[in-house]
Amino acid sequence: MLLSTTETIVGKKIIKHIGLVRGNTIRARHIGKDIIAGLRNIVGGEISDYTKLMAESREQALDRMSEHARQLGSNAIVGVRFSTSMIMQMASEILVFGTAVVVE
Image 1 (cartoon, helix red, strand yellow):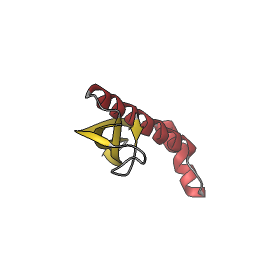
Image 2 (spheres, one colour; image 1 turned 180 degrees about the vertical axis):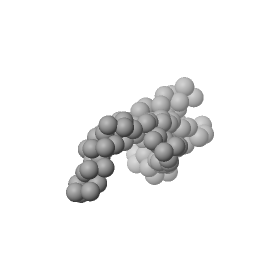
Image 3 (spheres, helix red, strand yellow; image 1 turned 60 degrees about the vertical axis):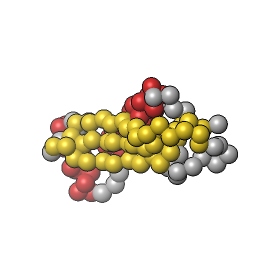
Image 4 (cartoon, one colour; image 1 turned 90 degrees about the vertical axis):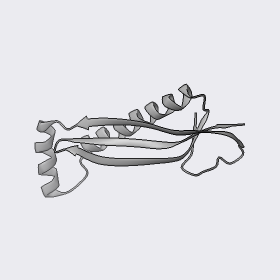
């Protein structure tokens, strides 16, 4: 599956627009890790557990979007965008979306 943040893919011709595809995941934080993160927040620096959680969440959302596009007969997705939102105090959603197309 080809993915692009632009509306085209260099060297490929879009022969069919299929439509909107998306993938998402909602992840909750671990209360114990929140305590450690709070301490890290006081002294500064990267909160590596959250960085890892967000990276894994983005990959899962991308996988789900790609599978959605495959099911519709697409071989590429253009205009890929990410959105993050807080669902509740301890959980966040990662949403990725784009336009499924067929390229040659």
